[in-house]
Length: 159
Image (cartoon, rainbow, N blue to C red; front, top):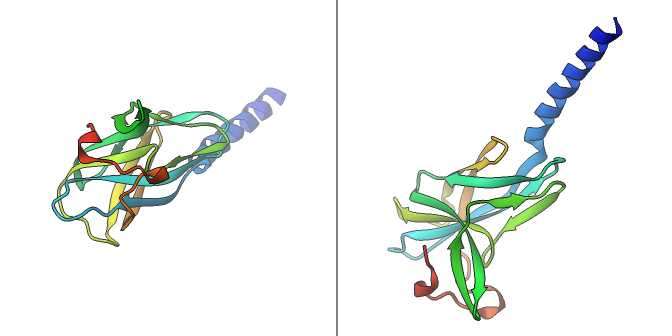
């Protein structure tokens, strides 16, 4: 009798743990940078909160508004800020990672349409544990400067 009760309780525990894990990962404050007409590349930013007990990684993103979607970061190479593609962005357990200008971000490359301030851009995020999160990120007008006043020159944006 005890084995059946234990197995039932264990099954219920696994069910609620699996159910809760989807809620452990949240995306806050997503937005896409507004770019001038004719510019075909922009960035998407957000805060990824992992309230769960295990580290996970953002491994892929996609959006119907861009032909190519990549995960990127900025690095300081010999005093010059350069953009680089990365294979993943880690979301540590019980922590958050901020995707923001001058740091980790999602690049939307070869836009299919001109974006307007206030447009809602669908983005699907895929994580290393199999979770997918689809969100709508509003387009926002932001200053085109980097942190600490460093401006990014177009030839420095390596894709």
